[in-house]
Image 1 (cartoon, rainbow, N blue to C red):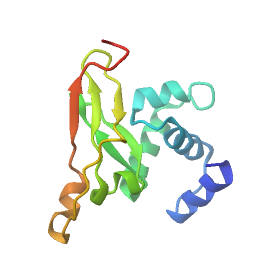
Image 2 (image 1 turned 180 degrees about the vertical axis):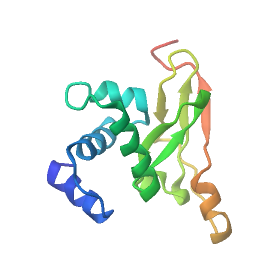
Image 3 (image 1 turned 135 degrees about the vertical axis):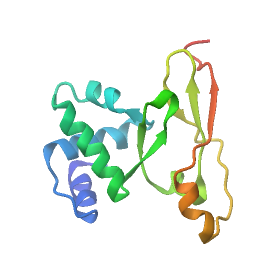
Length: 138
């Protein structure tokens, strides 16, 4: 996704396309795995050093439904962009490394089920995670 598409996506969510919002969304789209606030700060260290603004941006994106908290292991929220793959009807699990703490999407393992209206909002906040050692830490 290029900068103009990111700007358009923010506009679709009725958000101004500030430099921080553009940068945060760009990272989340291109990294392809859930990131914590501290990981996001590290990713943006050369372009945006205001940690509070990055945090407020993540919270705003969650509030409007652009991103979601994909994992909350050890009390640390990790964020990912909402799309067809992590819509409640196509929930995908995450793998959490017990050694390094990296959270990864498991795109080849998907749980697909019809979700009736009663469970849709409940499952939007649900997490399915596998814990173990990642290939790097084995």
